[in-house]
Amino acid sequence: MVTVFRAVLFAACIIVGGAGGVIGQNLPVHVDPGARDDTIDPVAVPALRFLTTSDFPPFNYTDAAGRLAGFNVDLADAICARLEARCTIQAWPWNRVQDALADNQGDALIAGLDIADSAGERFDFSRIYLQLPARFVMQKPVAPDFDPLTMVGKVAAREGSAHAELVERTLDRAEIAFYDSEFEALNAVAAGDADAFFGDAARASFWLNENPDCCAFAGEAYFRPDLFGAGLAVAVPAGLDNVRVAINWALTRLQREGRIDEIYLRWFPVSFY
Image 1: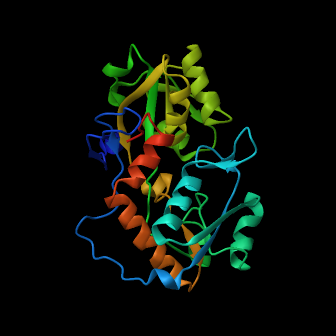
Image 2: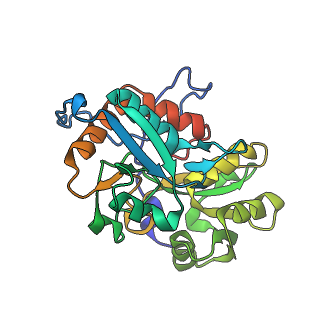
Image 3: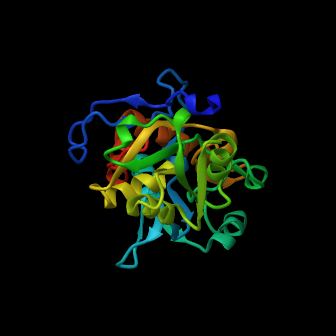
């Protein structure tokens, strides 16, 4: 076994009141309290045109009523409100949304774009507002006793994912079962066809909220930016510094005022941190 599963949990345990009744959740903290504030004139950004996609639940997707919904959509609204800027949010297909941003169809893209890929050379990015760790999920009776260093049995993971590659390389006493999606892998754990799931914690949290009697997170959250990505940030056209700085200013204040925590717990009442 390897020490990769002994990662330090990057989160603060905060007692939260009035956030859906969730008490003592581990919440993400991505703003250094001692960091120097950006200086902006909100008048310089009177409106923000956000672009997103509609196929990335629970972050940005079309709900049953045909409306854009999700964590990113609510965060974009909160950024605009904090800046007192007029706000529009328009959904584009994933394979066209980057070109739309580059072609000045919008001022900012909030859709889970990977900073490390070619987009990092094409666009500028805000500060990271949410990291995406990996977690194990098991059925509730066995989850409290979980130890990844002694893991045996069958571990379900999404085929082709960095999570699947990691457990295949490191859990040499376990059998790795591959599935087409995180939700199929999690359903296998619920059905007893797999002993554990390892994968994207945000997707798992969303699923656990819909399956509260079945399963639970087991062990700690694992942060590997080199494998799972640096986290979520807002992309802006290269050189559009007034928008990037304004978004950073808003994100810092939303974090300090507890608004990002409120949005996070609205979409992830089962915290993945």
